[in-house]
Image (cartoon, rainbow, N blue to C red; front, side, top):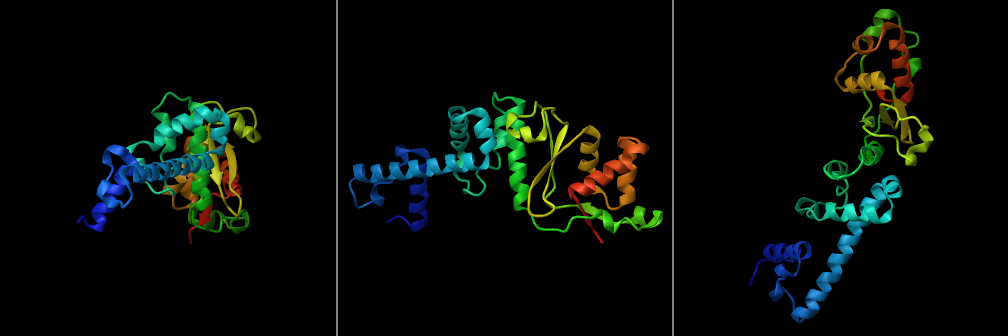
Length: 241
């Protein structure tokens, strides 16, 4: 008699890989009835996976249209390593998968933006740095002020035109999108190339002085502090003291 673990393994293999892996001796019903039940269950699981992708990427679904979105989604979920992925993480690699297919840069961008939104929403809590915390510091104190990246901060470099599904951000395509959740809501902030590159460095910067130096090197001295102020207002930094 097969072990429980072996039986479970063969049961899952049948669901994932089809009738050729049907474990006939596991069921008391006839093979035909058991296989019919397994097909129904497999269809239910497959449908749930497609719905999970649709729920994770509603803007991409609207941008592409129902049939094209579901066609590429079905191709995605039929990969061997996705078949064994739990439902909570099934959508994680979708953007990277789309980049390997014949999709537009706009569609790939939109997928990455939507997954970044989910990551930001689910990230740990932290109090964002407020301008009031540094407003009264003298120059030496300001330059030594310890900072870090807010755990909810995400940054996307855009490769294609901005999707109409992000029309609330305007009609012009920015160089990047900064995703932040300083409080309860996840917010999008369009950024130019310089602000994108400055933001990208924040995770590896320890003080405000370091950040200011980077901002001057990547941009210029006259706009460096204004850019930093805008990033603080977006809620993407924390007081690391």
